[in-house]
Length: 189
Image (cartoon, rainbow, N blue to C red):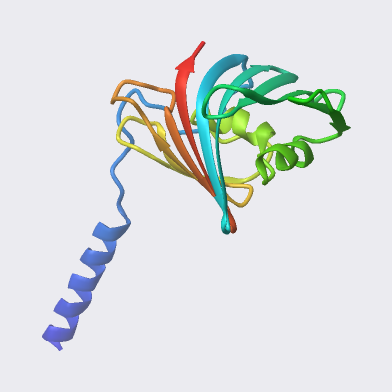
């Protein structure tokens, strides 16, 4: 009988140890959605969907509610320019040869240029290391209080930072059921 009681006590202690997590580091808030804010950045994007792959450069200017995205070849030639306004639900695509298309969402037009729909609305938060406030999310922080892993809208985003003090990620790996996207931020403006 004593053995059973000792075994039960040991199990209780192990369960208690397994459920106690250390508090977050002092001075670091929990990772939560950030308020939408303007930014501009230059970077590179590579993506794979099944057997299809693409590698491009890009320059992105986000001035809510407007976004402008210039997509370039790896050698710097402009392939397409996309401009959108979420307030008007209008996105325009201009290809290098001058042809234009208009749609009410980014997904349709980015799929035409990149071969897959890029979640630009959500990406405006994700690229800053934050979930967006429009849908549920699960986030795991790192030891510095930054997002290390985020799951939202069917995507899993892994963040990489230049150093321990940097608050904005410089590398993102986004994965959905059939697509993997890698983004390298070369310069924030």
